[in-house]
Length: 605
Image (tube, rainbow, N blue to C red):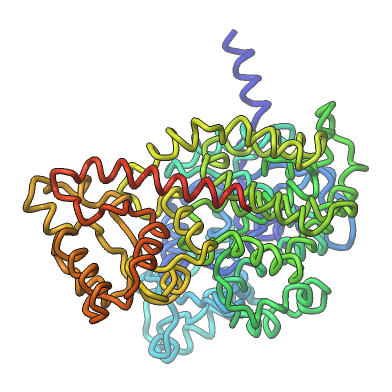
């Protein structure tokens, strides 16, 4: 029994040892693929120095973990029967390439730089090369020069000539020990190619001493990069798109420092980002992977892209290598649709037209991801009008914000949704979901209950603000300044029943006075004027102002306008009568009014 179990385990992975020089040779020949090589090197020179010191002293430096890849393209155009993708150990390998092989790394500006490690054979000390060290004859200023020298004997002779009188035996012993770093053995755990992403991830977590999970998106990015120049450039397309969305100024760095990518049409496809200041939706690479899975493969799980790019038939689960180039074609088409300026800008305009005008109003990145994928999918239907397309996407996005449809095990829900949208039609399936999720009971009971929260970033409060934006509602007690303007520029979240008043009258807990049903956006000047006075006082002042026309609290001078303003903010008309004793009932009533505004807003989308 134990023998069978051991065979079962061994079928999942193998453990081998490889010398540093062999590892670097395998990386150079592409037998081991390191997808991270074109990403910024995150280790500093101190960590590189410490790695060299550990190898010199014979300390363990941890296992590398690789995963077999079928059908990978190597340099020169050959197709490998089995190529190893490095999924853990990228920084260590990159550090070895920098320190031992003398190769450059990519910095945060995507510029190639050298990390140079020096060694003092007399003190057996490693250090980051500095101008002082370079001038000190006792130091070997760059250990890669020794590792790559044609004649180690000549290298040693030159050192002794620079340092007459040193202990030659000590020097030679240290130099030989330094040279042995090239033969130091590093363990490699190789995971089998027939394991699915979930199993590989589970094994990774158990092996990795930090217990850090490896996401399906990480696997997908690694797999994409194994398909020769095309795969590497598609991987860069995703990376650079996400980077430029956040830092448009980095365009010049990419253009100058990555000439290989700059020579492809992909950089031109995302060059518009250099002039973009929008931050409503700054997707990360995991987001792009998920949207590409929905658009290109109609699949909801990031791991599905790995299976598709590995040539695995989703029905039979068998690998057919002829499927691989077709899968990369689908991926490329999907990515070029995703990064297209016209599509991206139009989708963001659509979300803003639903009232979500700042990034802080969207607390569900997955709602944006699925919304964008849905928008791109519906664009493939040439029979659908643009108005209908926008209606469906807006309602789906807001529905998902209100129901948390894309939280939890969202990937399975995505797969189901995208399949049923294809089978039943988007409008029909949306109607089915609405009937199920947004019933009368939802609007009357579930939503008011969900508004019983202190979180101003809750999707329910933010959807209420979005409804106010669409309705062109004004701030609380404001004559003209809208919620939209205050959301984007300056405005205060105001306690309708002031915090200080509640604290002194039986409600000292934050969970009581910081209920979102006690919040409204207002102008700073109005907030200051109200201060800590109860509604009976500041509303009496407002009514007196309306009757006399003498402005003191705000600019409203008309009774109908005052009532309209309260309605726009879902505030009960009898606010002037609300005391600390009435406060709990006030919250209940306002939640119902807020829910009613959200309902009317949604139904009008």
